[in-house]
Image 1 (cartoon, one colour):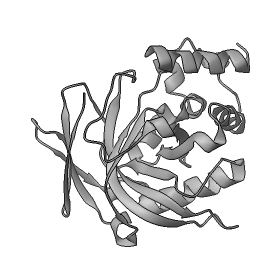
Image 2: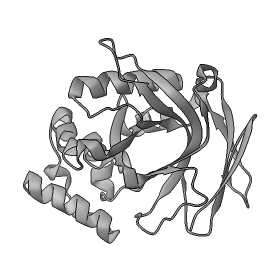
Image 3: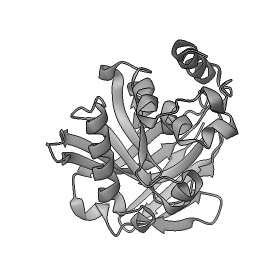
Image 4: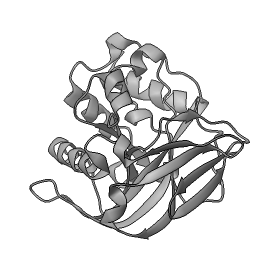
Length: 244
């Protein structure tokens, strides 16, 4: 399978909401090559958000990574405080609560950026890769870390204190909620974001002011279906998000 064929298959699978016909031996052997491929999946000016993966103990146990990986999302894949989330375009979606950051200024030479706003939201991965390819780091990267959607709510001016020590309860409104928080992110949300920015800048990722970053899951992801309403609770916020 050529690079063009791989790109076409991934894009077609997402459009048709089906699993992609991609084998493990068709994945890039080098992770930098995987990122270069992923950056060709959309125009740089269409990138509206980034999602960080592999930044939890359970993710690192699955992938054997030490640095986080990441993927870009388009303007159509970023939802800002919408009243509901439409799952009709997603293949087997999951959902997990995350702290969301809006880039205020781009990283300096040491990879440090500033942030203009912070929010609480749900990252909704929906990988189209078959299970064996999905379990590979290169697979995660070419599939934009599962892509899917990001929903951002409870938006306010950036407050660094929200990045650390945040506790959260998450789950379906009809079930007991699961407790978690920023302690479930390796090196904390701030550490995960700084690692992402350092790697992204080194790879030439199309970072831009105003893009949002989903900073890694605070609780393990759950399967989500139309008709579900998810709850995200912190000491200062209560969000209910209907899925249709």
